[in-house]
Image 1 (cartoon, rainbow, N blue to C red):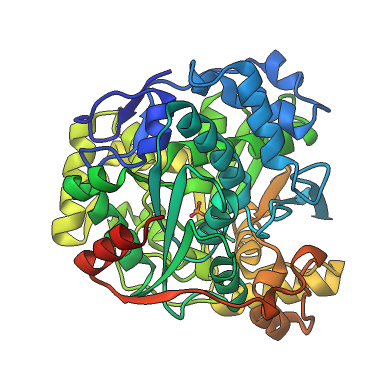
Image 2 (image 1 turned 180 degrees about the horizontal axis):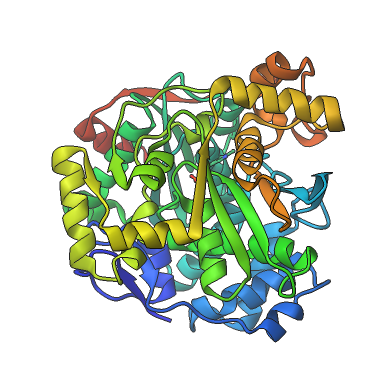
Length: 463
Ligand SMILES: *Cc1c(COP(=O)(O)O)cnc(C)c1O
């Protein structure tokens, strides 16, 4: 399998190269040259298999010869061994035809672990084999950063620098990033919002001298390997609910469009997914795009679901590439318009293809809180605000359809205890393995939102 850029003017890469590189040199994102197919028979055969086995079968066609079968199976096994559920991603039913896929049983209590734990293993295999070292720089709205630090701490082949918006992540998220003691992991609080952090990471990738000097690599949601690892749980949950014989819909709390794009990939591979519901909080650029066809930036509004407080959804570019018949020049033009004028309008053809796959709904802060309260009153389930946005959207959009709808439970409620307590009167406690999080000493640098300052800091503090 080979990987091409969504903007059509970067070298074609192998899986390993695309994974280690992140952003393409023409500013685009890497996507596979074609979508591997799974037949109904192959999907039916996944029923009852362990998560790791499904992961192996779903991802194997994308890997090419990057790893041997044994290496790849070993990496998958190590990645998920630390999850606090034998199922890895268990399903819970909360109403007739309504389910939660619990993606928060990994070490940092959010779905980012599912991909990041695997990426840590794959990077380590690839780099150790090549005798190389890389500097991973990532932007986070809270959950990616802690997942990356957790996945890479102590690995000798990498330094990790995580940029997060100062004062705009929850205390649990911050402490998960600032308390690990290994000196190859570094938390940086940037004086700006998440989009500033993400923009500075992109700037570093476009500064080729810096990029080459530190061997820059990315593991945020633009990294293809992350999207790939996330396709797996769409398969495990759909199959548990009757696929391929019965279609399933998914409601996905969406920020950077990585998680829901993984659902789209699963569908392209042959999984019978009826609707993909884009669930947004008040930062609703994707909801507005699906409603109006116009993708237009607005300021970022802080919300109680901070991991979705973003203005621009990076991975949407991957979908645009398909919506525009995989023509890199068309995507490039849209991205130029976005940079120059703050937005672009989809062609009629692209918009109708978008609407053929995706529904959307936006949850206000009040609706999010009301959903948390209702879930507790009706089911005694304590859910996180992001999950609540998804549950709200499933109700708003799916109505009385008979197809089962799975809302992705993207984080554990204990990551956002204040918002959850305010909404439903229950203060969620941390799981046992991190009960002492509030006592551990923190280590963080607060830095101006300035490229040169950040680059110097990174150069000087690499181990
Ligand atoms: C990252 C994150 C999201 C959004 O996922 P995207 O892939 O960026 O769309 C939703 N919920 C939680 C808890 C997250 O950490």
